[in-house]
Each structure stands twice: as C-alpha cells, then as structure tokens.
Amino acid sequence: MWDPEITAAREAARLAGNDLIRMSDLTNRITKKGEIDLVTEADLRSEKTLIDFLSKRFPEDGILSEESAGQTGRSGRTWILDPLDGTINYAHGFPFYAVSIALEAEGNIVLGLVSNPVSGEVFEAVQGGGAYLRGARLQVSQTEVLNDALLGTGFPYNIRREPDPVLRRFRDLILRARGVRRAGSAALDLCFVAAGRLDGFWEENLNPWDTAAGILLVREAGGLVTSFQGAPYRPRKDRTVAAANPALHRALMDVLYRGEEAAAP
Image 1 (cartoon, rainbow, N blue to C red):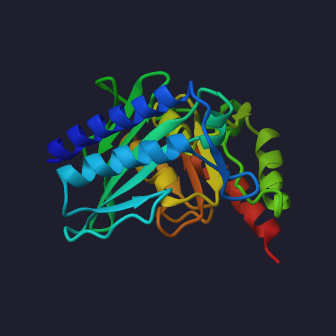
Image 2 (tube, helix red, strand yellow):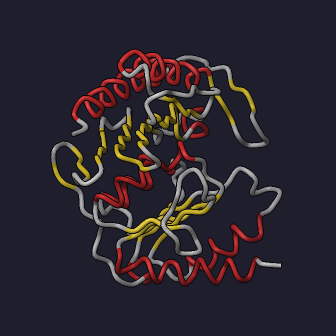
C-alpha cells in the first residue's frame, strides 16, 4: 500500500546521508540552539535535500522537520523529518547518527525509515507490514527481567537546569539492568530495540522527529512504546518515551513510574 512512499523515503535518506558523509570531512559551522543543543551546516544541507526531494514527489503533503518551519499540506499527510539525529555525535566525529523519516496519515505513523549513513544500515517499517533491516524481518528481544537486560537512554538538553529527575531514573536503572548505553541518537536506539540489540529504551523531552520513525519500527517488531505513565506513546503530545519487548516493558515501567512519583511535588 505504501510502496511509492517507502521507495521515495529510501532515496531521500540515501541522498541526505550522502550529504552528511561528504560534509563530515569538512569544517562545519556550528550554531548553538541551546546551552548544549547544536545545529551544523550539515543538518541544514541534509534537511534541504529531504524537503526538496519529498516535496517534489508528494507536493500535497505537509512537512514537519527539526530545523525549519516546515509546511502545511492539503493531503492530510505529513512527513516528519530529522535530517541529522545525533548532531553532537556528528560534530565531534563520533560515528553514531542517523537520518529519520516518518509519514503521518490521519494522526497515525504509517511509515518509518531510519538510515545510518556510516554503517549503511537502513531500518524500515510500514504500518501492519512488519519492520525490516536488509530484507530480514526484525523482532524485539525475549529478555524478561531487568537484571538480564541491556538498555539504552539519552539525556535531555535541559539536564543542566533540571538534573535530578533524569539522574534519579538513570541511577535506578543502572543498578537494576545488566548494562545501560547512552549513544546519542534516539532514532537509532529505538531501531536497536526493534532489532533486539537493546532490550529497552527510555528518554524524556524528545520531539516528534526524534521518535516518529523509531516507534513504528519497535511496534512492528513486536514491542511496546508508551509514555512513562504507561499510555501509548504519541509523538506530537508526549514528552517521555519507554520502549521494550512486552515481557520487559512492565519491569521498566515500574522503575520509571516510581521515578515519576518521586519527582512529583
């Protein structure tokens, strides 16, 4: 059903990823959006590539993207784009970043694609069609207890102003899990949950472009994605996200929700 869209998303991601790889060897002008929130010339170039390509293919569709004002469409569909998820990694030459593309139709994410230009891996999913990497169907892990789990997380850009709730949850989970990784790209972390490389993931203060593609991948791979309160995660509304296989999700939520209660005034 979504063949033209997924084909276009693959090509758009390939072109944008080429921009990122090519510009990684250059001196990128870096601008601060916040105290530790950056935007590079490569972000802007990659975004322009994505928007130009998808707007030409689907001129009636809207665009929601990280670095631009975007555009309102007439079709009832919106492309949700992150041209460079992992900008701090990219700016420092740390090779863990991604191009993330999602399509929203009638309020639902129906297509998600996340491309890692460094590894060449392209994770993709369409609603009801499963999640795939290089033609192989993805499946979340079967890990049932936190003591056996490898988890992923990220720190929000406002952590210097409000560190305590974030660090409380981080401490609680590093003491319960087998390991916790903080690699710096929420889009790829969610893909790794879908692929069973991570057993679970949590983060807060994310934006729709950080998560829209990745959450569909997790769900299509058999996982659960909710807010810290346990309701199904909504990219445009929720500021907290927890993803895991169904067996582990409850244990993860127990820790996160306790952290929410402790942080409440």
